[in-house]
Every structure is written in C-alpha cells, then in structure tokens.
Image (cartoon, rainbow, N blue to C red):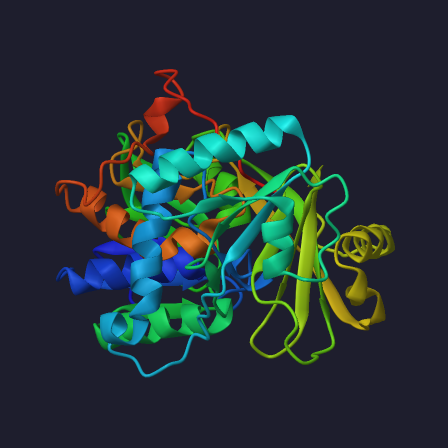
Length: 379
C-alpha cells in the first residue's frame, strides 16, 4: 500500500470505484481507494439492482438519465470486456392512493421535460404489461421501457478494473481508523495497515459515512436505515419490468438468471445487518397479493443492507466547507447504485474545480440555505 496519495477514496462500493475511475480518466495520478472488507461489501452488493429514471426531482432524473446512457455503453466507456447484465425491460410503478396518482402525474411531466419518455397507464394497460398483476384498488401506473436492472457486483468489478488499468491502487481489507486534520485541512489517513499522507479524501463509505465524518469532526446530516431483500429460486421468465409501489411499499423484479428479487422499506434505524423472519413473512404476504403466481416460488436466501438516508432523500455530492480537502458522496437514500456512473463524473468535476457536467444542486450547503426539495419517490 502506498504511503502517499493525491486523493484517497474511502469506500469500495460502486460510488467509490466510479469516482476513482473518473478521476483517473481525467488524468489524476496516485489515487488510492480503501475498502475495509471487499468490493461491493456494503449497500452496492446488498441492493435490489434496479436502474430507473422515473424520479420526482430534477436532480435525480438527470443523474439517472445520464447514468443509463453509461450503463447502455459500459464496455466502450470503461474499455473492459465485462457483461454487467444490464437489461432494459422497464419499471412499472403502481399508484394505489390519490396522493400517489397525483404525484405520478407531476413526475411524468417533469421526466418528459428532461427527455425521459415515461407515460401514465390505466390499470388495464398496466395489466397488459404484467398479465398476472392484481389490479384491485389500482388507480393507475407509470411506465418507462428504458428502465431496468444490472448486476451490482459485475458493475463494481468492471469499474474497479478500469480504474486499476488507469493506475488507481485499490486496497481491500484496509480499514480507516482516523483522519488527520491540521488547521482545517486534510493531511492524511490512518489505517490498520499504516498511514497515508494526502490532502484530499473522498467519503464514499455509504452506511458508515457518518463515522468517517466524525473522524474530521463533522456531524453529517445522514443516517442509515436497515432494509431487507430476498431472492427466490430461478424460474422461466414471466416478469419483464420491475414492479414497484411506494404506497404499498414493495418492489419486485426477475433477474436475467430467472430469480425473483424483492424487498420493501421497514425503515429501521439500526446497526444490525441481520435478516429477520418477520420480513420474510410480511414480504410473502405483500408479493403474493400483488403478483399471485409468486406464491409457488421457493426462497433461497435473504439479506439486509443499509440505505444511507439524507434529509431530502437526494444524494449529497459535495465538497465540505468546514474541512479543506474533504469531499462527500453520501446519502443516496437507496438509489446509489443506479446513479453511480453520473455521480463519479460529478465528483470529478467538483474535486478538479471544473464546471459541473449537469445543472444539479447536490451540495451539502443546501440544507443550511433551506433549498430542499424532497424526493417523493423512494421505497
């Protein structure tokens, strides 16, 4: 491991490796990435793997739109021959309440204005897309065929290999113990494998990002919620799009390998990453009511992971005003995987003090300025 770096990126999830790659692509040398376990150990490897552009705020729509462009051309972008299993069979979002249906109408108008050609559907039109969908009490739906799914492990590996090809040093099994700050400036990082002298640190530690913030004396406005997911045995393809409802609190999709992945947001603030029988029971009741044929599927495993939540459910991609050389890519609120390709570019712009590639406001100062527009479409 190097003892000196131009930039240290903390976190080996998709966000960390995307940032490292984009910085190296821009010509930055001596980048070191630190991961205390293995790549995609945290939220990336525990996510539902969905990639959607149907959001309710301009920032999230733009980042998702630009990320999908990269997902669609990932081999050319990274110059890596790895199939990330990106499929675009759509997201079908279901509205069961008047509030949700009214929000969908606003969302689709926003999305269409940004070049995302989503559309509103009647219950019958939704059933044409998913014939076995239970449409009882369904008011309507929103759909975009270019949303989809990618393999989070393969995507992370692809970015990591591309970063290494450009000279990034990736260290797995290296835990950050403390960060040295003098006179309000970053000076280095203490790890269980020694000290790294540096003047720039990127906090991309996901569920552990608040702990990293405390190392520089900053109380970051994020917290971690435990969410659970289960996977079933693989079966022949019967479900094309991701099926999701915010009011019913569920998402479910079938992967390219045939397994169903499904989850919902119990919204528990806890440090535990253990799964529970209560989730299994509740999830089974939810999904079999909405998608009745799933009652015949056998569950093969379940797991838990963190949503690192921000106050407005939008990411914080920003420099830290209090500490010079400290940067933040945190608070993704459950959608970090799908936004990571664009976030890597945005953080590169911020660190190199370039004009932002897109007109988005994701700096941490927005909370003090009271410029908060809460993302309404999070499950």
